Image (cartoon, rainbow, N blue to C red; front, side):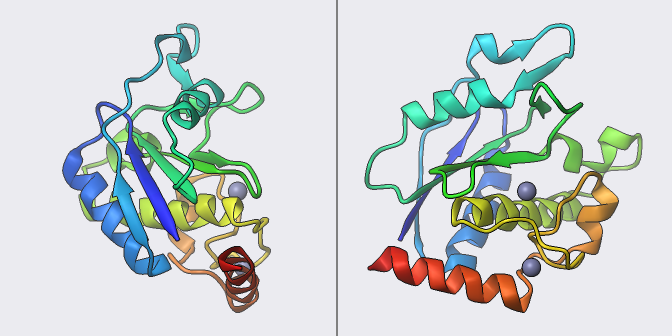
Length: 180
Ligand SMILES: [Zn+2]
Ligand SMILES: [Zn+2]
């Protein structure tokens, strides 16, 4: 399996390095770093001062090559979909790409002192969550499972950067099926 990692311009290279290393370790797979993607100008919504996740994902999918089994897109910008005030990330179930925003994983966003390690820890959990969706996993009722739905950082902080037993078995089956 090969997972592409696509930073959106503005994301710190060191953070992307750390998250890419986590992905390689977590899935025991190869990764490929793509050159940073320019944020599509039409993704910005002036009224919301946020970027449209759907427009960004579409631009990301346009640079995806067929040899990538999955694509992880990471942005530093705050993102939304029309029906929600904001989202931490987005992915379609069984879809080719997962999107993660680091913006609201930072303590500074909530007026608190920066905690870089905590931001990366939250990012790891949300990566397991969003990539989990791309592998066909749905939300889990176990609040500590990475597939639990998070609507705020408190929810994320309760979770582990790993799946519960049931979700892990589900993922293993799906990865096995993918490998053919
Ligand atoms: Zn989800
Ligand atoms: Zn679970």
